[in-house]
Length: 278
Length: 278
Image (cartoon, rainbow over all chains, first blue to last red; front, side, top):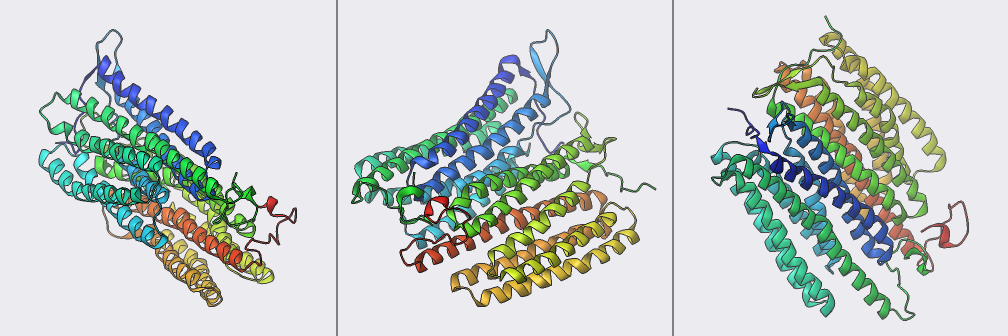
């Protein structure tokens, strides 16, 4: 019995659905990468790091989707006139997703914590705990993901769910606490962000478990790839845009509160003039 | 007898472990490259060169890992339904690592020396000695690396270890000396940096010697590639992040010490106003 589940035959429509999802995600991630780089100078100096992290996340994801797209097209072939795609000798590399998450999930957590007003000392310990939990979640999820054995998939899936729930619980609580000190406008965005976090993260366990439902293997494969892709688009570029909106509002608020209407770049390393903050 | 050890058959899991390590490292190096470029404007002018060197190191490594990834996928093939990967006619090019180190190890030494407060005259002679030792270490390590002959591997490995130990000894002493003149915060980072240096550099001789332990050739090959990849991620992006943290703290300290709370760009080449330094 092979370590990895065999690739089922796919109809042209099924093959294309994954193909299109992967290509769409490359474009979305690439565009978000450029946008976050351009947008960083439109927020106060102290939020620029948040935008940079958003750019790194989408840039890393763009790379992995380019690789996955190549792996997908190499894993299937189509005979002229045939109604199905059949597997080639090449295996589709699911692992790209896990390598991606290993880098991007810690960064997503850093991105969120950095936009909230949390004191420096609490922030460090919070980030450390969240990053460790994220790494545990991904590392323990992978052996189950690549296994064709139901018990193995369920067992590692269960272990991986513990840090997963922990992270969501901590983020839910922290965002809730942060909301208390924010203006109504920011509060509204944080409320939406919390729902988006739950909705997008909620897709991952469902996609992970899809191969265990008594589905046609082709449907399970396509559902999992499309599901992960949609969840990634929501959890990276759209989530990043919401965080950008919060950073913009906070920038405006700080500017309005400043005596001369200009931003005080109090944590800018250099210059006492506003030139460091564009 | 071939000059290079033949490529052993690998299980899917073994093949994937190297495949995933190489791809993960590409993403990590690429992200670090972008990050160090973005982060350079957040430190005082005199530390911006340190961040630029960090970007060059990770950019060069990203290139070499892209090449190694291509070489790895070309070196192995998978038959449909088979549980093993077998070698193709293409050889895996180990030499990319040595070409990479020949460029990046001198830069890693420059990066560290540049963030320490060492007087200009001592700094030049120190860098010269370290760079010469680094080149000797890499050039003498390579003939042993590509040899399938145990005596040749051990002989060159021994020669290469002399400059290796010399570099670590000099760095250990220099960082120790630098610590005496630093604030507690910087001292803490330098303490960690010294341990990280020892831990990451310590992996290389172990990975180098792996083929000599009486291991299954597949296990030795996979262990060596994964070991080198992890060591490179620690020794380049993570090491660079620690140096960045030190540069940030020193920037804040200089800013606090400046009479008007602004940094005096005393070594900036242009302009006496802060505008040259963003």
